[in-house]
Image 1: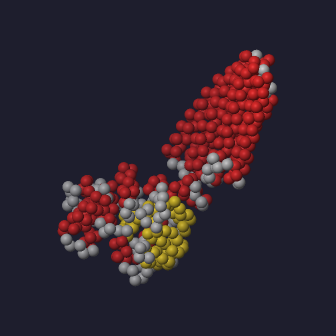
Image 2: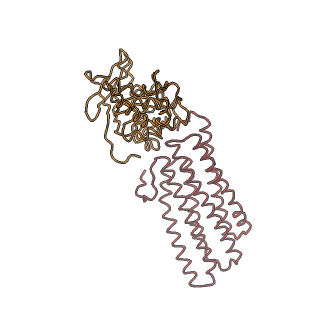
Image 3: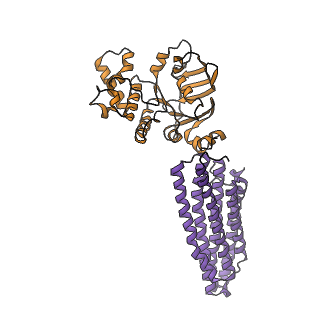
Length: 229
Length: 258
C-alpha cells in the first residue's frame, strides 16, 4: 500500500495497528497463563492473571480514543475507513477475550482451592484451549499481514472448537452422574470450556473483520460457503 | 441513499473536448441522474470543470474550443452540443453557480429578475412573484426581503452565493451546475449551501464540481472520479467512498495520491 501524502496520518494509523497487535499479544498470554494456572494449581498465577485484566481494559479504552481522534482529524475513506472501523470492533473482541481469560483464572482458583482430588480430567480442555489460542494467533497474523486466506481458515476452524465444547460437556455430564461429589468442580470446568469456546467465537469475528478490511465484503452470518477467496 | 432506480437527466456519450490542440476530455460517458446530486472529483487539471462547462456550452465563448461526442438532454433526447442548438437556450435550461459569488452590480431584486427580463418577462407582478419564489427556494428570502432594492454587494459572501443560486433558479432550470460553490465560503455558509442543495434536488438535477471530498461524500448521490481527462470511476457515492472499484480512486480519496 502506498503512503499517504500526510506522513503523520501514516504514523497515526501505523501506531494504532501495532498497538492492536500488542493488545492481542497481551490477551494471548493471559489465556495461556490462565490455562497454566488451571493445569498446575498455581494460585498466585491465577491471581496475577485476574489482576492483569485491567491492562487489557486500559488498552481498549486508549485504542478506541485514538480511533475516534483519527476519524475526526482525517475523515478516513475506503480502505482506511474499513481499517479503522474493523479495529474498533477487533478491540472489543480482544477485550472480551481478556474477560474470558480472567474467568478461566477465577475458575482455576476455585477448583484448586476446593482440592484437586475431585477434579475431572482436563486433557480435552487443554486441547480445546490450544486450538483457541492458535485461532487467536492466526487471526492476529492475518490482521498484521492483511491475509484473507489465513482469516478464512480461522473462520472455518471455529466449528472444530464448538464440537470439542459439546464433547467436553457430554464427558462432564457422565462424570457428574457417576459421582455427584464432583458436581461443583465439574460445573467450574463447564464454565472454563464455555470460555474457551467463546474465545474461538471472538477470534472468528476478528478474522471476519480482516476480510472486510481487505475486500470490503461483510462475511458475518453468511456461512463458510461464501468464504472462497 | 439511492432507492428507486433513477432516470438520466443528461448523458455524456463518448465526449471529447479540445482547447485548440489540447485534448482535455477523453471519451467521457456517464449519466447525470434526474433529481440526484452528482459530484465530480479529481485533482486539479483532471478535466472536471471542463466537463461541467460542456453542459451549458460555456466553452463556446472562446474561439478554438471544440466538442466531439454528445451530451444528450432528457426528456427531449436531444444532443445539446449539436451545431444547430442555441447556447442561450441551453443556458436557460441549465443554470450555473460559480466558485466565487458573482452578483451583478445591481440590486438584489434585479439580480434575480435578470434572467426573466432577458426572456422577455415584462409584467411587474409576475417578476415580483418569481423573484420572491426564487429567493425562497434559495433560502434567502427572510434575510433580504426588507432590502430587495439595495445593492447585492452589501450582502455577505454566503448570502451572495445564495443570491447567485436564486438567480439561477429564477428561470426554472432543469439542471444546475455548481463549480466549487463553497470554496470561497466559511463553514457555516458552506453548510447552508449544502443544505440548500439537499432541498433543491427534490425538483432540480444537480452536477457539482468540488475539491472537497468530504463535501462530495456529504451532498452527492453519485460520484465520478476523473483523472487527466478520463473518467476513472463512476458510482453510487456510498459505495465509491467505502469500497471503490479502482485502485486509482482509492488512492485519491484516501490521500495517497502522489
